[in-house]
Structure formats: structure tokens, C-alpha cells
Length: 131
Picture 1 (cartoon, rainbow, N blue to C red):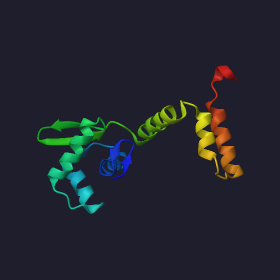
Picture 2: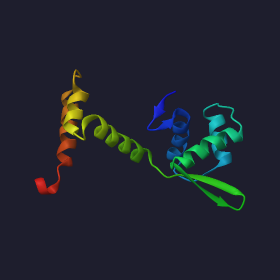
Picture 3: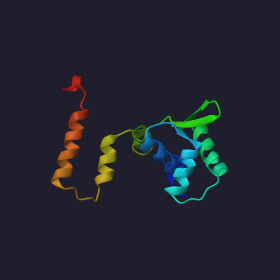
């Protein structure tokens, strides 16, 4: 089974719903999405199990109003990917972006446009006190 930023494939799939909708969702909306969009044919209990895992992992929070529980994403897709990119950089390249770029581009032909984009990104990362 694939892992996406510390989430199972199914958990990641569920999170994409929250990132796409960008609003609190009820259990009924989530079950509908899983069964209609992804053709899972899941029971409500199955969806509840996945949602409870996401709550325990800190990716979702719940809000109960009367008899209606809603779920909200605590982590944006951008924040999640940035967190794991920083973790990869730290764990695999001792925090060195230079070492990462050398490894990443080794044996890869980059177009002039791609090189210029990387240069622009790096230039915009230079702190004001160094310029």
C-alpha cells in the first residue's frame, strides 16, 4: 500500500475532499463523496473508522452541533507537502538544499526555462540581510 506524507492512500484520498471543498463536512457528505466519486460502496462505519484515524493523527478536527457532527481539515495540502519536503531535506541531505538539488538533477536534463525558474526561486529565497 502506498503512503502519502504519512497517510495511507485512503486517508490521503479523504483529505483531498477536505482540501477541495475547504469547508466543514458532515459524515453524510463524506460518505456520499466516497461512494459516488470514488465508487467505494463503503458503509458509514468504514468511513467513520478512517475519519477517526485522521482525527487521531491530527489531520482533522470534529465539531458537534446538536446531533450533527462535522469534520474540518487542520492541515492544508501545501503545509503537509512542505513539512515532508523539509523532513526529507533534513533526513536525507543533512538540511542542505544544495546537496538535494545536486542529487535531484543528477542525470536529468533540465530545459533552459526550468533552470531559469530554479534560479529565480533561489534568488527570491535570499534573505534581505544577505543582499
